[in-house]
Image 1 (cartoon, rainbow, N blue to C red):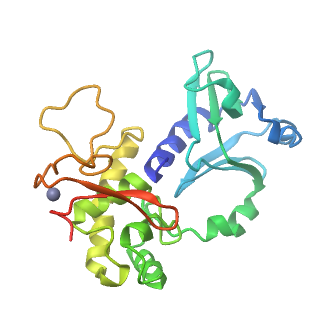
Image 2 (tube, rainbow, N blue to C red):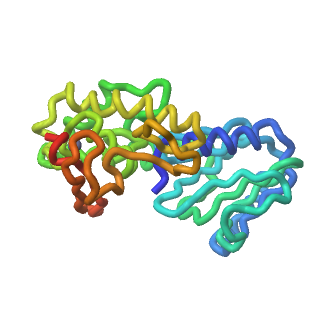
Length: 271
Ligand SMILES: [Zn+2]
């Protein structure tokens, strides 16, 4: 599942290709958008800005119109030089925006809609989001306030995934953040002190920012002798059954929360 850093990184790449450039064409190949007439509505408008909030991405056009997307579990933004091979089948493309030099493609996008700027400021799905861990104005106070308003019997790992508490954590950073802070993801929110809850975001945030710099490539654990082709390296995420890199206890995994998202933890390091 795309995490906040993946979306922020995508916003940079999409923005780099579109902002201030001539938009040659906009296509919405998916049947669900056939009647939407976006190409006509957006024709002749420049892209002012592209930004992310949590896992939502916004392509803001001149004249008060914004494309809003959320990738959920499967979606992806691709940015390609004109004529280059796309990373996924064209049949899975929902949106294609062409400039003289680039093609920006959204694949498998379950949430893709055109809205006015005004609506982005009132839409519950957006205004209800917690403070964005990757935003410059990320607020520790706002994060703690939402966390304390949440169900105190909920596991901290589950609470971190709730985008109303803090926006931007996905399953990887939830697991890694709890490991870095030495906190068992199953511990009830009521039993996690403010200082501990802050420790999770203070340790995760710089690594997530680094991941944005690296184009969304997550690395929480740096091997001493890096292999060039490694995709990402983690402390606990998807390492169940393997020895902990710190204490050699076997990493465990189990589904957590209403959505039963698999959480990973080291029983030796996390209390
Ligand atoms: Zn350990």
